[in-house]
Image 1: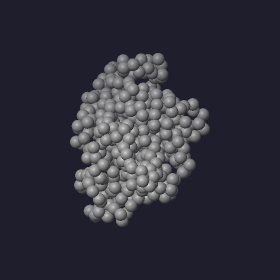
Image 2: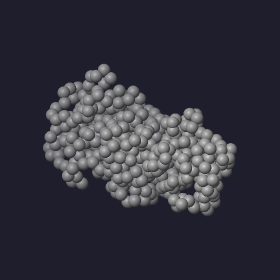
Image 3: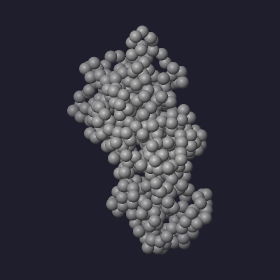
Image 4: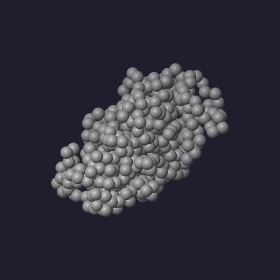
Length: 477
């Protein structure tokens, strides 16, 4: 496999296969963009490395946060974009890019409503709030899986007329000296290369979580962590951007997860923690406030003896957890252990019963943990437990973009016809793992894809005007 490269000059054979818009990556971001472009009658091709679209979206729970959607309104939930934006900034301690927070929270509901018009039957997740959210705004399909979300998006996009080119690994981009993209080169399984000419290119190919060298450089806390994301997240977008002189931002931001069942390698829903569950280390102690977020929990879990912890909860929470397919998968892999009483739980964990008893004594109505967590109820025997470790899921930093998803160069000028969204671009989590608000990844993907499509359409319209005699220019951001 060749390295990502930007080549200067004319692309050989680009005239033979040419589309107005090419999109690299057929995950939630690319498919959302392609669907909106198809609705506008703009010919688009999605370039996808896998045989079937999957990516980080398929590996997620498929929950998309949005404020003011038709589904949310139908459920009688009071919420708006300003409140959503405030929650994002509160989680990121004010460090999330303000222009993207405003753009994404403002576009998310419209993006979901458009998807709903194409048959995606969203409902709002009920029963609990994810950490940092002050309203129920997680939208899910009835299947509650990322795989179902990707499949539904693919059906909608291709049904509307978008072209999907699978088993096509984008590796080359042709551009002129001003950074104007003219074509993409895709490696095929037989070693041949297809060259696709385009007027606008959207990078929707996620981040660098699958690139060990880049993870070691930018995310040292995750250097030895399990990677739960897609292998295709190899940093290609960043490498192309560097060669084009693009600016990078928030490379220290990422989504971790402190509830990766080990050794099964399955995600255990954080609903377990938000419903009253706790994380216990090998010494029988809690070690952080679990309600602050599952992303930074990855770092806390990895810092424990052996880099592991036990999710401990009771039968009420077990009933809730079994409503999530990822938990069902973990249980099918024998991750769930049940203990009749506290001594049995201590024996499972390998800690002293006295120490564990003192730890769980704080878990009671009105109880306050040493980390500041306030409990609403006690855990009731029998106890259920899952052994977990911390994992890296996807990165939240990348190409710097403006509110229209245009890629910026190092001087803050928008490159002529290169757009990026989702994991390929800077997200809304700031520059640290603790800034990740639940759902930020799919927010950036779906809202970003929706916005990028509108920008691509506007650029194509401007190109028609320029062909009539006007001269192109860059805009300082």
